[in-house]
Image (cartoon, rainbow, N blue to C red; front, top):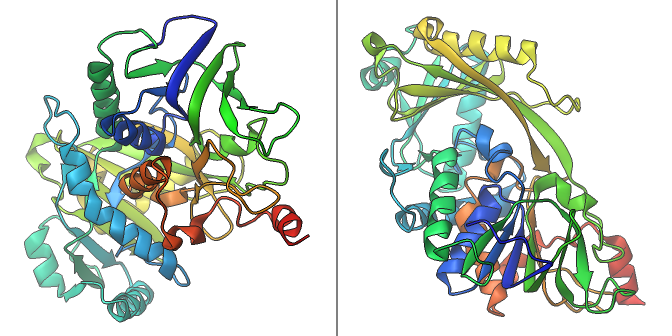
Amino acid sequence: MSCTLSDHITTDLAVVGGGIVGLGIAWEARRAGRRVALIDPAPGTGATFAAAGMLAPVSELHHQEEDLLELTLASAERWPAFAATLPTGPAGSCFSTTPTLVVGADPADRQALADLCEAQHRQGLEVSRLSLREARALEPLLSPNLAAAYLVPRDHQVDPRAVARAILDGLAVVAGGDDATQPGCLVGTNAASLLHEDPENTHSRITGVLLADGREVHAREVVVANGHGAAHLDGLPHGLRLPLRPVYGDILRLRVPENLQPLVTATLRGQVRGLPVYVVPRSDGTVVIGATSREDGSVGVSAGGVHQLLRDAQVLLPAVAELELLETTARARPGTPDNAPLLGRVADAHGTDIPGLILATGFFRHGVLLTPIAAHIATELLHGRSDPAWDRFRPDRFSPALHLQEIS
């Protein structure tokens, strides 16, 4: 669905960034009848390529993130219907309803998980404590020396790489060619700047995107969804502060030999001496093990991180030592000060939303999980509909300069 090389491209919606969130927004907008230009030189190869795809609003409950919990639960509910709209490839559906099993390795981990379970129950979330015998009946290859186990039946998983491929394939089918006048096209270059109705006023209507190769994409609306790169896009509204930071994670993919299949059927989330580790099974006989979390600025895979992941995964599943290591990957996730996304429109100096601009970034560890709700919210905003509940995630909430101008 590549766009032809012309001086300018005209479309209804330009989506900057082809990670899973940008892809999801482009897909939903296209299904709603809009012409879409997706701007990314290599869609699906960033954090989406590394992500394990856990849909875990219950397992990933964190203190003082109750507002985010409401959003993650709502998005998890949307995932089955969202996945059902995607083209199905030879490997079948990218969405799996297998449950999540949470385990702890030692007494301190057991206490930490008990405290988490209590917090989950206070929120009305479904979590069941299991005996080790019950846990090993579900997953026979679990270590017999674990200290605690909990079943989370409604935390599921998807394959983010498969989702990205399905959306890209679906947009190509919808487009039916490489002509930019068709319903969808991929612009295979980076965005350099937002275009404004008044080039001297960054609070004026957004009219499109200037590309790194000098071409322009003219659009009625622009969605900026290129992760932590969003903060470096030229032409953002003056006074808008996007406090995004890259949080790197190392993640491993391993092949399970036939004599050990299935290594595990549920998604396995563990605490090992206070450190988190997870093992996510795939239908192709592989597992994903992850993930470290570091803010050292190093884009490469950490040798220490790989060691830690393999060591801790073997505490939970000793047979991990017999798997074939296929791939080590490191990618950066865009974090925010409150770990909540920057999602919605941006106000001008008078408190009025700037026409033509939506931001969708800062999803941190929840990018895959929040894709359906982000696509829904963006599509609703494109149609002029909003909900006060979304205001808590506004992209301008960290922009005191804008708010001061509003007051004055």
